[in-house]
Image (cartoon, rainbow, N blue to C red; front, side, top):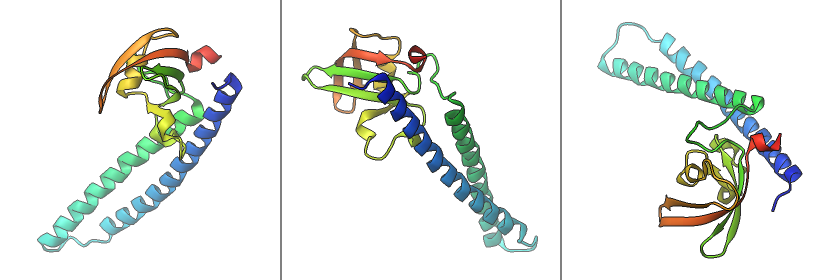
Length: 169
């Protein structure tokens, strides 16, 4: 089981790596946005239907890039400000939980609000805050038994430990 210091260090490293990946994506998105905007500005008003269709497609691409820039910017702000948290029906971002499944296996997992927070190679120890498992954990404490639906059917597990970001402060 992770100590509190190890869990805090893990979250810090994961958050830093996620911010770095998001900043790289943001740089690429801003570059793509400039290309698309310049391409739209270079078109003359006289043209055929193919030109109009191309302009429409480019305009839609620009809209998608703008939306993604907004999302990535918000995610970076959440990670830097530590404000990424679930709603009332979601497990708080950064919650670390240890579960014992009916087959006797024990697994420690971390809840993430932003999938970019999942470090490479640690996909099996992370869950998104809106996943069926994470939703089943909302409001639970050590000793509780949860049941949730997975792609392979119903799963039962005992909560061995659960540590939310607010319980660590």
